[in-house]
Length: 287
Image 1 (cartoon, rainbow, N blue to C red):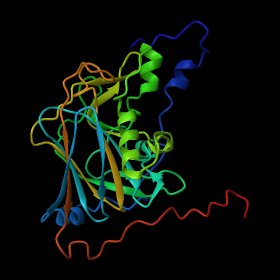
Image 2: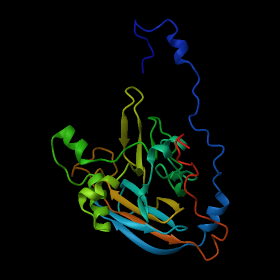
Image 3: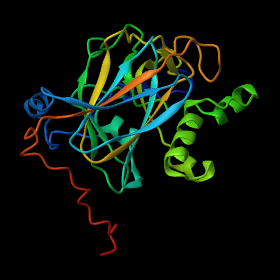
Image 4: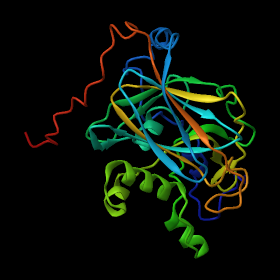
């Protein structure tokens, strides 16, 4: 990437560019990740339910608070787009933007998945990630991103002029409508920006465009999280397959994803309490 400055740049342009960055949200005051608690809780898990997400489709699943959920490789490398809602109030749902701001562009063990305003509390905590070895590659790519919004038919139509109905947005809309009995029009506004499970992404170093590359997920890999409240999950097996070439089409090889709901042993959560909603007064200065 060129660092040369255009002729109209001010004389102190380089000095302005060299100002040291400051992390927007220092998180030292957040409760630290209690590794011992979660590791102990996950040692003796019993399988309650298995849900197989079909290729190029989505399904919903319930994760009771205090339970674990694993999203697994099934038959081949496959990316999944995850939505999370409060099982009792769909208005509280995963907030990828705040999760990104509080943690990073890609999440892994110890990171929390936060809910939207005005709720702002951890919906889930990531407790195990078999792909945490990947780190950052030479292109700036990482795994499990919270920067991509989800493939959707509107952007696809904008760029290609075609209607494709099995983008993750549409898959999640159909799944939520089927679960709740809502119409597609009623369900669609509740579908939100996702956690891209197993997806390998970043920003190009020259143009800073969002990129994807073939997911490193292989047999035996999974991402696991702990439900901090009663959750309704929605997972789409992306039509991009491993997202190594394309999405929003029938071109890529696609595979199912396995969702496992696991219950910890009796007594493992004896000292645990579900997180409260944000303590902010919501007066917005008009007390």
